[in-house]
Each structure stands twice: as structure tokens, then as C-alpha cells.
Length: 224
Image (cartoon, rainbow, N blue to C red):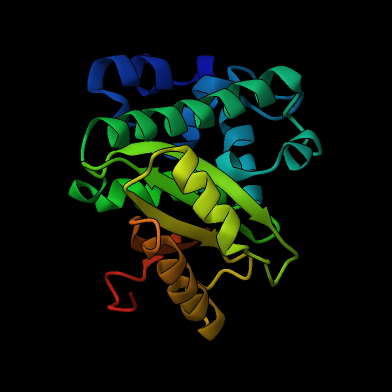
């Protein structure tokens, strides 16, 4: 069914304007971005097919550019719009974290890290650098590894913390396997970095592990 075949009150744009964006299903919101379908496939059907192929909204927005380029129905303009939406979400969360204490909103920290790291195909290690009020100064991806292991150098983490004038850090990395359970190596690395950063009076406040649809705080688990 095409958009024009729907009654006016059921069309996504009119529905959004009348009832707000929360009233729309995921496929309806995506259809507004896509605007048109493909020959023989209306825009709502195309939106639903894209969501199913990529594992829902989170999967689609976390998809790598090469994955999007290989997806039927996502030309350069549509890919650019989806990537722009993701970047706007990242920046909105970054502004929130920069304006207030990070641990006043731990869920925002997890969401922010998931947007950056969760769908990456290989393991990456990042650090949130915080000021004395625990507000976000910067996020840096410092190390990239293979699918199962990342080599992290404590000296480099210390150097970057000093460069940012950080008073504290949140460590983070992704598990491409999908599980967020910390390994013994994760726990050992956390303690090594805590000791190294303590020498320059920088606190490790947390170590967050993310995967698609999941995030774990080692501080909340009592592992720091």
C-alpha cells in the first residue's frame, strides 16, 4: 500500500504532526526519512524490510557505511541522511554529558558509548576523559584490535589523560561477540590502568563494555 492509499490520519507525516513522533512505529518514522519506495514496493514496506534486514532501528543506525551501500533501497542520499541522524544523536548525548556530571546520568553514558562502539566489527578501546566535575571533555578511541583482542598500552592512556587535563576517566570497549560479560583479561586491564593513572592523580570511575543492544558497567557490578 502506498502512502497516498492510506487515509490521511494514518499517513506517517500527518500522524506525527497530529499526535507526536512517539505515536509512530519504527517503520513509519523510517518511511518519513526514506520518503519514497522502490518499484513494486511502497515506502512503508521498504522501511519494514530494511529494519528486518538490519535487526531493527539500532542495527540500521549502527550499520557500517559499506553495509548500507550494499542495501537495496539505500542510495547515497538516503545513506547520508541515516548517517546524519546517527551523528546528531551522538552529538546530542555528548552535549548532555558535557553540561552535567557524567554519573548523574549513567544511562546516557551507556547510550553514548553504544552509539560509538556497539556495532563495530572489531574490538576497540575508548576513553571518556572527564573534568573535575565529572563532565565530558572528550572521547577518544585509542586502540583498535582484532575481532577478539585489543592491545592497550597504559602509557598512551596516561599521556592522553594528561593532554586533556583530565581528573577522571571512563574506560570503554566493545565486544563484537555480543556478550558484555567482562573477561578476566578485561578485569586485569582495568586494574593495570587504575594503577597507572593513579600515579598522575587521575581516577578510573568506570569501565563500560558494550555490544549491540547491551551495556555493562563494571563499577555497578563491583568490579572496580
